[in-house]
Every structure is written in structure tokens, then in C-alpha cells.
Image (cartoon, rainbow, N blue to C red; front, side, top):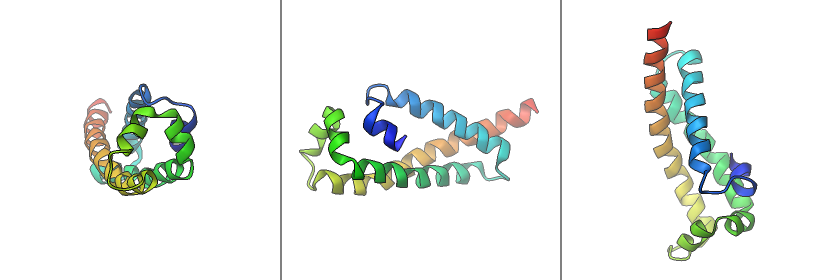
Length: 115
């Protein structure tokens, strides 16, 4: 997704891709993780945020060229765009990790009921 969000996926449909990824990850966590689905979801998203942030920082100019709304938001920030991405990437990873963790808990409960 890191590379895809830079070069292929426009920001207006990006949430649909993330929803599909979260649901797929939650099902995999529910089926394969040895327990603690929330922790597995949290850690998955934190690790994922590392390479997504890295891709966005490395390909910053390409990212900004294809994401006008995000580029406009960065102009009002107190730090340059790349620095803001480095600072906000882990926070987004943490928040999305909490969301994935909750979805993984739900998927675990649904998987156990249907098994």
C-alpha cells in the first residue's frame, strides 16, 4: 500500500482499500494468531506504518504531486512535509492499529462462533 498510495491509488478511494486490507488482516489474525488479537492487530499496523511512512517520505515529491489535498494541508504545518510525515506516520500507525485490533477481536469472536 505504501507504493500503491504514492503512484496508483488516489486518496478519494484509498479508504476502501484500507477497509479491505483491515478485514483481510483481521480474518488472518483471527484464524492464525495464537491469542491476543488486539495486540496482533496493533503490532501489525505499527510495523505496516514503518514501510508506508518510508515509501511516502522516499517518494515525497511523487506523493504530493498526486495528492493535492494532502499537499495543501502540509503548507499550514509547522514543519516541512517530509518531517510531518515522519512525525505523523507512527501516530497513524497507532490509531489504525487500535482499529485493526478491535476488528481482529470481532473477527476472532465471529470465527469461534462459526467453527
